[in-house]
Amino acid sequence: MVLLQLLLNGIVTGCALGVVAVSFALVYSTTRIFHVAHAGIYTLGGYLAWSCVTHGVPDPVALLLAMLACTLLGALIQAQLYARLERRGATHLIVLIASLGVLAVIQNVIAAVYSPNILQFPSAWAAGVVAVGRLRLTYAQIATLGISLAAFVAVLLFARLTLLGKRIRAVASNPFLAEITRLEPRRVYIYVIGIASAVVCVPGVLVPLDLGLQPYGGVTPLLTATIAMIAGGVGSFAGAFMLSVAIVVFQNLSLLVIPGEWSIGITFFIFVVFMLFRPRGLFASA
Amino acid sequence: MDFLYSYLILAEIYVLLGLSTNLLVGIVGIFSLSQAAVFGVGAYIVADFLLSGALPFLPSLATAAACCVLLNVLVTLPSLRVAGDYFVVTSFGIQLLATAAFTNWTGGTGGANGLPGIPPAGLFGFTLTDTWQYLVLTTVAAALGCLCFWLVMRAPFGRLLRAIREDELAVAAAAKGVLRAKVEAAALAGAFGGIAGGLYATFLSFIDPSSFDLDASILLLTMIVVGGARTLGGSILGPFLLLALPQALALVAIPTSIAAAARQLIYGVLLIAFALFRPQGLLGERL
Image 1 (cartoon, each protein chain N blue to C red):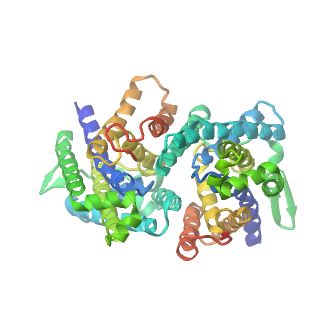
Image 2 (tube, chains in turn yellow, green; image 1 turned 90 degrees about the horizontal axis):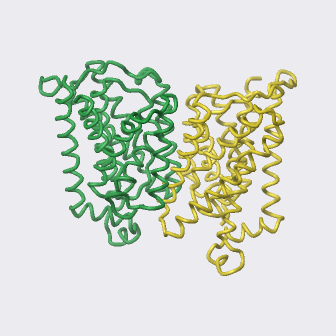
Image 3 (cartoon, rainbow over the protein chains, first blue to last red; image 1 turned 30 degrees about the vertical axis):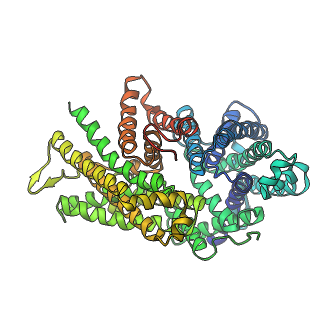
């Protein structure tokens, strides 16, 4: 029974993490920027929603407001920082350093404004429990599962069906060619990071409903998500999502034998195994 | 006076770390975010040996340096197989793993409470008790480190390392051993990190995981970005400037509850500003 419960918890958290992985993959496969600051946006989303909720805004509206703010911040980072760096001919290393700087700024602004301690969402509904047999799921978990899956499907459909989605994929597959057409890669990059920031806000708000908020809490999820993206194969959204679920389930099951503090070790072990045996990932496109 | 001395001592210890980080990030071009982990391993090894009385100071420092050489080589090895961004993940992961180990392996590290009461360093039967004596020790250590860095940089080996960063393929095609050069650079960086850790632990006589976490790695990176990548001057200037920052902040009335966050915030701003406006740092070459 414990096993089943852990499996279930793993699937719920895994789906949320899958959304982080998909949003990161969206940025990485298009812009080729290793957007570390994404972890900051993930955290910021949760805090903004928390602020709205404590000021009496209904929860769904708070989520939407946080998504809107994160979209703007993401677009700003691309337009004002990454684009400038690219114009100045900055190397990959410099862009990475700048992104790390943005992460440090976001995290510490949060820590200074909200305090570095854990904050809990005041939403009373989230703690309600549905029990099936002896398996228990909180309402927060059910919301996480449902909304995360919906967000994942929405991203897939968006990339496949909409004009902007096609434009993004075109730029991703050949930025050089895109430059001489009317696809305007630079503008597309702004849209991409904006959209990805909105998407990452969804797990950024949902996961803390259960686990609480911490200013420096975004790094580990992002690391796990990037590992899932690499293991799934860069460019494959479904691969990134599935691997996220698999890694988190594996992590949860490992709790039976290894204490939780070491779960980062498990994640990392998976990464090393992939690097050794299948560095291109499971579902890499040729 | 002691206040000034301890600033100088810490800055000199961080100069060793700056050299270590500069060697990997600046010169070979391996983006390592786990140098604080290596630093921590060195500190904990020396602390454990001295606390248990198993080894005197110099042998434990040598053991720490040897372990850090091994560790840093192991940590850097993936960069030979996985390129660029994948190594960022590796090094992020190693740093988080090390923080988890420092915090949770209470047997060896005292966990989150840290290790208090580390005995002072002793050299040839002479115990260093005064701050100025430590200053002499760290000055000698930092000077030796700088000399070593300078010699390596003007040797053919230094040119080889720089060539690897510019064009790894060309170096391999010229039948130079890329693998060997990277391993040797990582070993040297590891030795610097381990020795810095040992000096740090004995000087402060207390260590805890917060000195060796991801923020510490970011601080090391900030030091070389601000000071200047790839030059000796940059590796020295960066630590001295950035360690003066907390002192300067202490003069401004900032509530203590947000002082740590304010400091890290400034590091972040510095990273962004230098990346945008002066990627070569104050005294460096273009990254």
